[in-house]
Length: 242
Image (cartoon, rainbow, N blue to C red):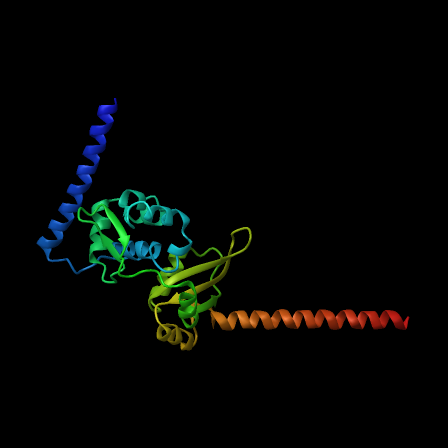
């Protein structure tokens, strides 16, 4: 039984390697090394998100994995991530997609069974990263509360390259209908903010720089406290008059 399991595991690994080689051969035969299908683009974006500046510092599981093998993570491990596995579990397709990436963020090992963040692109220092995203982060409100991340991401794709989307939720995990989105450049965020009449499915959206949103909320809280204090004082004065 042990020998059978060993042979089956060996056969499974061999088939996956053959799948990767066939993928490469088809790409070379068709001259499509540089062309990326919609599925490949989504696969690349998803894996780049996992290893990117926004997710990697706070992803406990992935951080544990990259410590095991000089940063390398097997594709077998990667397909345990739900969003990637929904796109594809075919190692040949995944490796082919990563191989076409132009960002330079990811590397494949020689037999294309592992992926890692390129050592040439180390994670930025935390304070440096926080400062770098300030002018690229926007607050958007007005999405239906039943909207999915994929639906919002598809809509955002037409607005510029977005590095990260955070769907704001209640304590019960219900979507609030608002997001924080981080564009890849200050200019892209500025262009989005300055575009009038932003709508999602014919519904007007409230769009603010993330810092402006927090400043607005702080001002509203201060105003509520001032109103409550004024009301309490007025009620106290009226009570004393009786």
